[in-house]
Length: 242
Image (tube, rainbow, N blue to C red):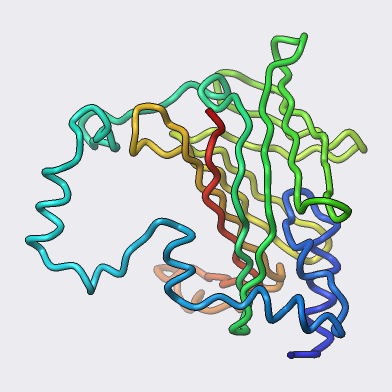
């Protein structure tokens, strides 16, 4: 097992963040049994996200699969007539899934996740409760979603501890970008339009240091560009309970 101290410090920092889902990464270097249990092969990863290797499917098979889909459920995004669901009304419910955490190593860490979104007595507030883990390791974060400006689709995640995370609805995505210390995080929740029930949600978070490598800026026509490193990428597909 990799005992490099730098990744462990990163996991410890991200554990304290809003929308940071590295509970499994906070185990001590001696927890080798737990680490080995989270290493997944490529087939299992693909099954977790209901994806298939595109190189293994020929064009005829793809066409046959598309033709066999029920017309009522094939309501994906049409560029000429996009489907945009009401936020947060269409997002209400209990969502469950598993977060997969990727770093520069071959180890993949898994963490059960739940997201509970429900109305409150206030017309501009909703519950936004995130739960990680199960049993004695369960971590419940009873946040609130607060409407700030309806026209600009600006919301805030109120962590109830003086921390407020500005978030924005763009299409069927709920996005936030924020820094904690010298780490920059981009977090997105996207409601799937692959079916009429809209009962699938994809969660992603990307994080890394805020120190960028600058290049360009050599003339008036070439702007200076800062590229930022990525340390951790997390992804989950959440399913709404019926």
